[in-house]
Length: 133
Image (cartoon, rainbow, N blue to C red):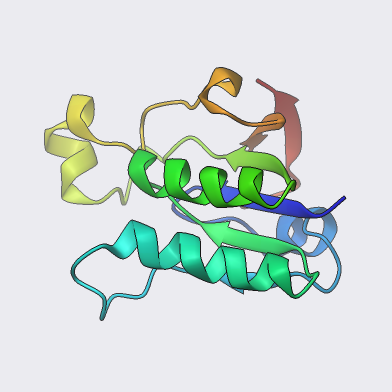
């Protein structure tokens, strides 16, 4: 069964990326040049990669991007694994500092959002460990 990994974090350490991501997977990030229908464009990329028989790793911090990616994964029969890291207290983008209740990055995702497995990456910059959500 193919896998779509959804990363929901500001940054994840190299150790995490090397150990947890499927070998040979294709990494996809939202294209900043795409202004309209960005989530749909991301989901189409995921669908094309899955159609080629490859696993996908997607940077999808927003809920709308995650929903689009999960719909594409489900349509191809792939399982969806999510990794979320709590934003750091220092060095956060201004939206987290001044409007934390509106930030999608600070909202902890739930397995009921459509994940087959969901983990919090604790201490992602150092020697991390995973906590199942």
